[in-house]
Length: 118
Ligand SMILES: [Zn+2]
Ligand SMILES: [Zn+2]
Image (cartoon, rainbow, N blue to C red):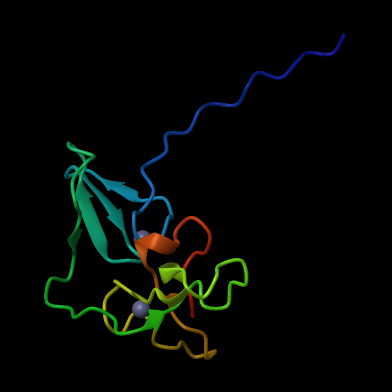
């Protein structure tokens, strides 16, 4: 009989960013951070709004109508015309040297079915 391997060690997970849905980074000074979104949260009370790291930054102006082309939603449904505005910092989407945006636009409403838009 061969020796059965033990289950690998567990790995602690941090909460997911409420803007983009990726795992946050925990810092020793008691905060969770999302580097991609530039925001952080106090780790002692989970049910608390976060803060933008760069408080001087304006909000990105990109908007999206996520349900506009969805043929399952009828015209008269107000979701069809819902427009969401990216809540990341202005300038986050500048293109890199390959012409790709540095990061996608993001809105908390879109976490569950789409991770942002270009
Ligand atoms: Zn994020
Ligand atoms: Zn944006």
